[in-house]
Length: 334
Image 1 (tube, rainbow, N blue to C red):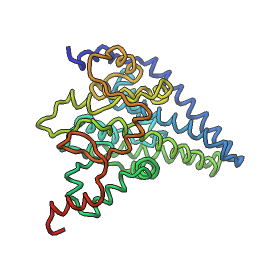
Image 2 (image 1 turned 120 degrees about the horizontal axis):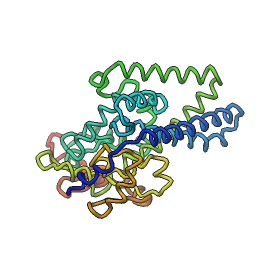
Image 3 (image 1 turned 90 degrees about the horizontal axis):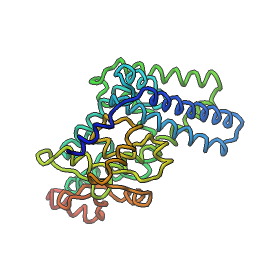
Image 4 (image 1 turned 180 degrees about the vertical axis):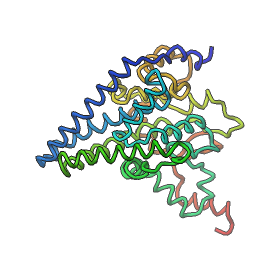
């Protein structure tokens, strides 16, 4: 029996568990935002920051629940998943159907070097980088910088870009319009109820939440021995398991992120609900290859910038002179 076949025993959905998880996460989010607003209105910004952080993490967890809805694995019916996913969208700043469409592309093309456009964080190959003109190398370096990936980029993506995300027309404009209307309604309610302090408290929680949340897809698909290959050599099961890592960050992290840490099994079978995923991984541990990454190695993942096809692994940026020399060989007119 293959690992994927073994996971089918864990795909049962439970509306009661789903409702409890959703209600509890919404309660933490609402309470955190309310307290943050009160603290900001009282000019107690230092005290408000940790509360904004908790609110942001609650929003990350809501995003993970919405993500399960997109896979049809949270509630038992598609209608319930779609309603919940859409209603959560203003809190997660994520238009439900558009991101579901794009995320399914990510699952379909995991590990495919010819479809890196579907990955959540773009990767250049070492050969492409060396052959690129100086301005393209500089742009990629800027994109792959810590500030852009974890500070500036996530806020721009969720606050601005997701108002009209990639493939918006293909996924359905109606749901996107509903999403933006719900978000406008949320912001209007915050402003009318508590004024600008409410907007600043909300925005602070957004910035902290998305900056922390982006660590998850980055490390899960950006470790040294991650698998990338050309489509003619691609095997889905191998790409799913070896192209994704398990984040061994502890039980509290698992609770805060709805078990998304067990990402190899999630890619192998996205029909497993988040509330079954950790148990599935624990029960099947040892029956397939697992790539675990702890906090220390996760920090080291910041080094990996390019995929080296010859070596079959991620590598850091080459020295600038070496990159320029490689580009000159590739293009004598450089």
